[in-house]
Length: 210
Image 1 (cartoon, helix red, strand yellow):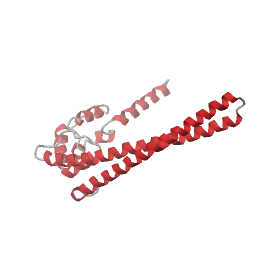
Image 2 (cartoon, rainbow, N blue to C red; image 1 turned 135 degrees about the vertical axis):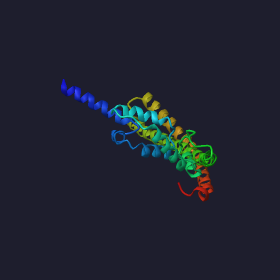
Image 3 (cartoon, rainbow, N blue to C red; image 1 turned 90 degrees about the vertical axis):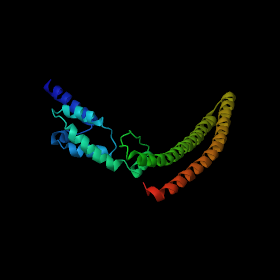
Image 4 (spheres, rainbow, N blue to C red; image 1 turned 90 degrees about the horizontal axis):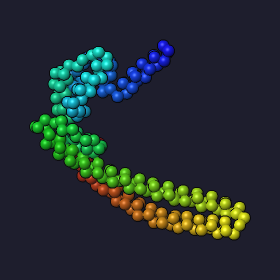
C-alpha cells in the first residue's frame, strides 16, 4: 500500500513537471528578474505570470510579481524588433500583442514580412505532401498488381482469372492517372520552391539569414 502511494505521488510530480512553466529549482531560487526577462525576450504575455504562480504554489513558494513584470518589460525591448517579428512570423509563431506602443510598429512590419516567408514555406510543404501521397499511391498500386498477378498464376477457374485480370487492368489505369497527377504536382512543387527562393532572396538583405 505504501509503495502504491509513493508511486502515485511520483506520477503526480512527473505530470506537474511536464506542464509547469517553471521548474521547482526556478521557484525555490526566486530569481524572478531572470525569469521575467527571459519571458519578455521570448515574447510571452504578462498572463504567463499566473502560470508561474500556479506552478510555484505546488512547492509552497510565491512569486515576486513586481520584479517579474519590470524584468519582462526589459526583455520585451529585445523581443520587439523588426528582426524578431520577422523570424517569429517566418517560423509560424503568433504575436500575442505584447509590444509597447513605441516598438510595435517596427515589430509588426517585420512580422508582416515574415508572413510572406511562412506562407511560401507552407505552400511548398503542402504540395510536397501531395507529391508524397501520390508517390505512395503508385507504390501501393504496383505492389497490389504484383499480389494480384501471383493470385492469377494460381487461379483455377476462368471466372477467377477474368476477375483478377480486370483488377490488374484497373490498377494499371490507376497508376496511369496517378502518374499524370504526379507530373502536375511536381510542377506545382517546382513553382512553390521558386516562390520560396524568391521571397527568401527578397528579404535576405534586410533580415539576413534565419
